[in-house]
Amino acid sequence: MKLFTVGPVQMYARTLQEASKQLPYFRTNEFSQIMKDNERSLKQCLNLHDGSIVTLTGSGSAGMEAVVACSFRKSDRVLIINGGSFGARFVSLCKVYGIPYDTVSLAYGEALTNEHLSAIDGSVYTALLVNIHETSTGQLYDISILSRFVKQYHLYFIVDAISSFLADAYDMDAYGIDCTILSSQKALSLAPGISMVALRNRFYEEMIAPKDDICLYLSIKEHMKNMQRGQTPNTPAVGIILELHDMLSYIEEQSVAHMVAQTRKKAVYFRQKAQQLGLIIPDYPLSNALTPIYFPKGNAEEVYQYLKEHYDIYVTPSGGDLKTKVLRVGHLGDVTLSDYDALCEKIKEIL
Ligand SMILES: *Cc1c(COP(=O)(O)O)cnc(C)c1O
Image (cartoon, rainbow, N blue to C red; front, side, top):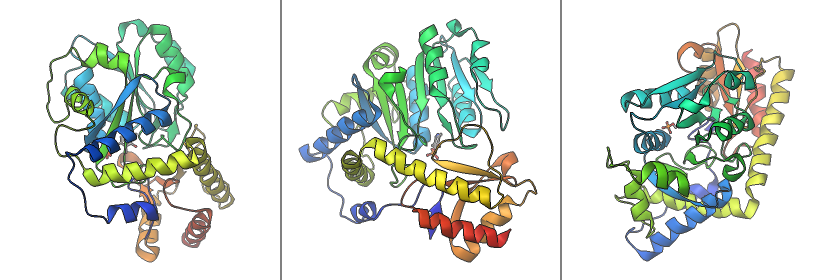
């Protein structure tokens, strides 16, 4: 089986080995030390100096939900960049929790530009919420445009970087990002099941700490209290936390810049080959995490099925309106340039 998906992705041998071990009991000093180590390392990877990391057991959407539910109330108003199904998830969360919001809505294929934001009076908002890489389309939004906007209007800047972290350059301090949401199964290439929320101290103290909880399992306050001693309120996904610990030591050895460069190299290599095959790649700015391929004849599903049935190769199908038109080829995890040679050969055979 070969996964060119965006999560879960092809896992590294070291992670599979880590995952095969007996899990330890977790209310111990040793496990607390691992949690603290993960926090230190993730802060370094994100370039967050004054902040904390909480680890939630739940997929990335749990991280999104915890942040929305614990940070905002009816008295706030947030601005959401909605350019696909993950932007729409922030919209759904605000609806469920009764948080007033507006959106910058992008049509399929429309790139986010400065003009979208310069038309908006930001002074009515508490925060800007964005999925910096909208995974459903592959668009990577220009963080400098968004950063300028939040700085101009003194908004909190909440970024879901779940599918962009380690694939594209990212820097919380440089761009004034107050909160970053990550999850285990994208570029970290671990099993799905945990999400990590990085919180700048000021954001936590001003927006989360003073509020009464409206949920318990996803309470960021409860997680922060427990994290003082390197623990979680409930039994966490112990195994994935250990996988994370192992992966972070590898990333520290290699450097984040190296990880991003490796992913970029795969993306550039595949895009060149795909263009040689006559495949259509959209022209909006793309994350290194994946390449969307547009099938004008509407045969995306057939190509997906053929690769799966004949070769046990998985690319990422699309949902909704894009189902028959767009496949996404992932560049995360343990895939090599020669894997892309093989993939392109198979695609050529189908076409
Ligand atoms: C994968 C992903 C998520 C989380 O989805 P889950 O299925 O809950 O893990 C959230 N946002 C983005 C941008 C993603 O790519």
